[in-house]
Length: 367
Image (tube, rainbow, N blue to C red; front, side):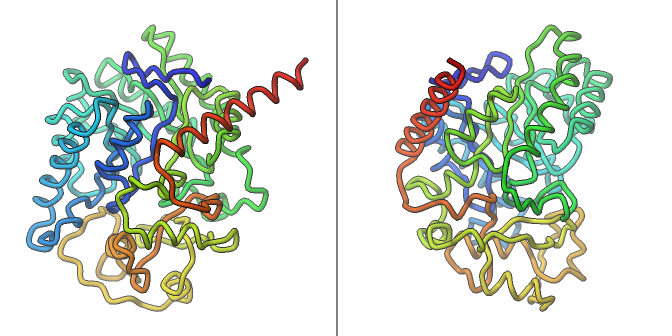
């Protein structure tokens, strides 16, 4: 069996964190289902208000309202651990973080930027745990040192997201194209991060679990990553083709009907590479064709909305509703491996069984 995941006293029965996926992919339905099975369920806060038909009237207010509602709904559906994923890159980050803290969410995951501003001092007097999402040991060191110097405390965990993940990636495009499709890149970052974290563990007499994600799809992958020194895994794509995932059936079948050659890289309007499932819309933007853009507000701080080729938020929202003529799905590198829609309970059961098989094989090889 897998070990528990202890995040500074917040204990998950299984060391599995469901990755936050926007827009509208991981909401209260998926998050509560994962939490009910002993993992950590995560609501994605990015442009969450776009799921409201009236969002164009005031998206910032819609984001606040929708996030609060989804947190409360998830808590009503589960007594397990519920988290929120918020991108530093969104222009209403402070508002979303305040909602998460006001609602006493169990843990906040923050990526797409360095979480070192004064607003993070709020965690000093909060029961909510905090975990930055990074792509290098250097970023971990910078964040932990800044928190130690400014707030006299450190994050409760760290998530390392490797180059095989789906969605926006904190790497150069050349670094995310991996013909070998293995977890060695992620493992290398884990190994580099361990000595960085150990120094802060000793300084604060506090265990800081490393949670690793990106390209982890089955129980054998989980076993490999935990053996490399991580204490938990983050998995997003694997949970998309579950009954409880909050997207349309068409979105789920986009994965089931894909193949290995379907997974490709695009350049996002925010200047980052993104891993997606290819379709006609994707091929169109890869060919350089302009898509009509009407931006009611600048949701991402680095988006030059007057000059970008397409609106990534609208594309993701359209896809979540099943409209792939005007959108696409972000996917981890192994998204094409999905073959059917099953419940979260069945998915977790498969992962645990695969993990136990991998563990047993390793024991037999060592005898």
